[in-house]
Amino acid sequence: MLAFTDPTPKPEYANQIEFVGNPVEIRLRFTRIHPHAMPETVAEIILHPLVAKGLHRMLTAKIPEWEKVYGEIFMPDDVGLLESLFGAPMKRPGEEDEPNHSDA
Image 1 (tube, rainbow, N blue to C red):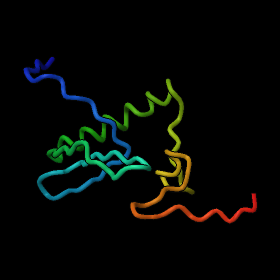
Image 2 (image 1 turned 180 degrees about the vertical axis):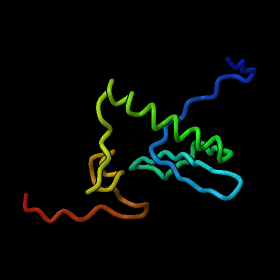
Image 3 (image 1 turned 180 degrees about the horizontal axis):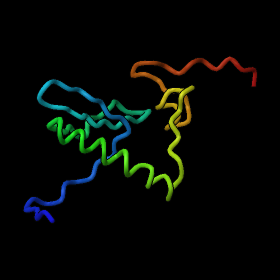
């Protein structure tokens, strides 16, 4: 077992991840997106490709185990991911609300 001398890092919530790679490294940029705020990068992890492959194998094994306990993870294919996460169409920064044309 590894012994860590650094303090435990502060946990951060992310609901989007970006993958960027080149021949010597793989970068994973974790971003938090909220419908009423600008996206915020909360972490960027740079991995050696061998470590990234190990992460892939670990997730491939662990996610089915997680789903057995907590239920299947729904991956939407007919709506935007953000809309499925937040339950309503998303507005981009600078977009105004559409005028209400109802007679109510």
